[in-house]
Length: 437
Image (cartoon, rainbow, N blue to C red; front, side, top):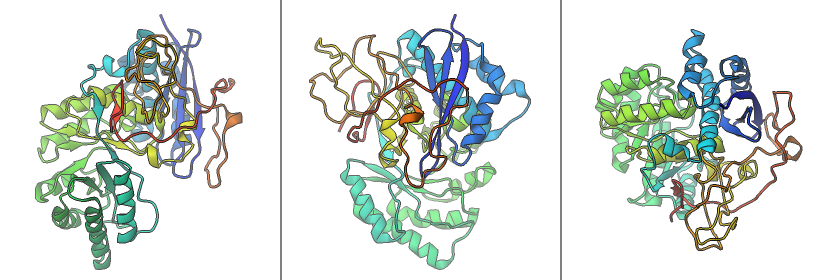
């Protein structure tokens, strides 16, 4: 029986938010799992929580995911909210990674099987720069030129509760110009960032109808679910929410109103893959669709892709990776695949934005160009595990916060994993075999 021996954490600094990555080792030589606990400004806090929870998972069988999660949540008699959820998620995701390696299966096969051949994504993180209609429109056109057919933006600046007339006019003009720039066939999602009162959210939502957004996201703060439900009841555009929730019970309360039918569970806040999968099934029972929230690092992207592959009611997946720091792909390694035409270790994978949460033989990846004609990875000897780059090889960047990775376990950092720079991937993520144009 496999046993968890220790957790090692790595805080990776970047200008926007620090990524907290986890390596969970076992008593089997070379067998470990990767997870992520990134939470905005709380990197060190979540890191501390992971290590404080160590007595709850060390010595446990990583296959017993439910028991481990319950030991880290129910048995504490305290609820630590999103900080607690992301600490639990990092460990839970690493357990699934270990299970996938031991069974030789990708995680999506362990949570229902691959339902989707490829996943639709929408771009986020692209609208940095000047807050003017011209700037937004130009950047949106660039994103569509990259191949995206959906994108999200927050046009409302620093508004809170209500906007003065000038801010209202500017925000709506930004949205109109983006719609003009991308055309009617591209989906646009409008981010509210929990900032509005009910009345202001209704005013904004009514006027967004002219651009036919895919959704109006988090128009009010998540703490008062009835307020979000009231906005959804009164506006003529779909409302999406749920990224800030930390329990299935909150989603159950929201769904009981029968007004919001686009749910955005965040696997980190929810405590990992299994709880998120349960929420997706709950949504399906209410004829709702899901668009998992993902604004963290590369391992969180991999987690969402594995989930999305198995979820029949997936609407679309959020994707930041192409607009993150350009060295994101250097802290994880792409897998090596065996060529379907018989060759071994042919380097068909030119680009990878995430660590695997799955098997040695199959994982989700992005692919840009390949010299090999095969399109499907086969063979059980091709490891899909990427490792975190050693501290000594970390790259310093001006403006990085907590610039380099930190190791908390007292053990040597991950062995030399190398670097591999690659071109950007395509817009659609394969659920195991390929990415499509």
